[in-house]
Length: 262
Image (cartoon, rainbow, N blue to C red):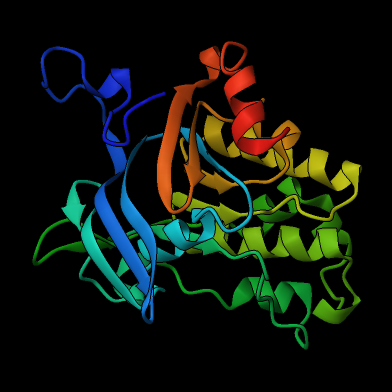
């Protein structure tokens, strides 16, 4: 079983010389909700352009890890570096401005607004280049969004309350893509959806990866996540207990069965 602190081989080659462009690096992260200590010394890395999946049973700490990255927990301690810059002490809005988009499990669309109104609302994030200089990230246009999600194009004038669960999920992800965020945190986006919608979401992730997006997914649906991810981290009781690359998936089958009962 891998050490909690072990970094992926790709990040440790050449005797510690930085050879990988890390979009996200978490080191010795602890997180609390009130008095409850949820995350215990979590360390992981996500390289630019990768799809990384957090696996684990319910309550393992996967969603809390995403929320901790965004500053949505009660307290954090440790290091969260985004594009090489420390973010553990930043408020949520400043983390979003670093180009991070979070799609929570509850989706959070505006149900009284139409699909297109939901897509027109998100602000474009600013990417900080230096202490004095920042630039706007270019988000996807409505045409690009509708090309990726034909269902949304058909329902552009429909209120959120009239969208199916799958269409609401597509809209939740699409709103993030409108902001220009390049590091996407996706929480259980396939949960409870029809197979045809899950397939559409899988195609979306493949397309985004090809465009250079970096994606961290929390997924209970292992069959959905397995063919999409470059690397996997397994969480248990608020800790990373296993990490491996997609190429190791077959050799890790027994371990995964023990940890996840898949």
